[in-house]
Length: 123
Image 1: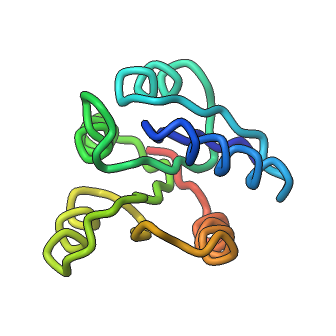
Image 2: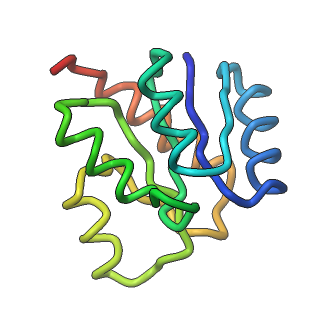
């Protein structure tokens, strides 16, 4: 299972990458939205974990572009934005799941497994 992790905090990006690899995922990790879009256009991923507040474009803008282009890629939005209105906006803009930082890594893995079970329906 190949996953893209887009997170601007280098330390957290490293923790996510290592933990996901230990859990059996193949991981590509980038630090901004531009690199995320380049990777998503170049490689096939089964899942993406995107930080809402990463540098331009933001994770939310990446999601908007993907959905506008017809992508059904399962996306977990990972963010410090923790209000109900933030969660509603993230999900309404096209995230398939939403996890607030700080988070429990086992919960992150469970949410990714849930996204995997739902499957990826090509556009």
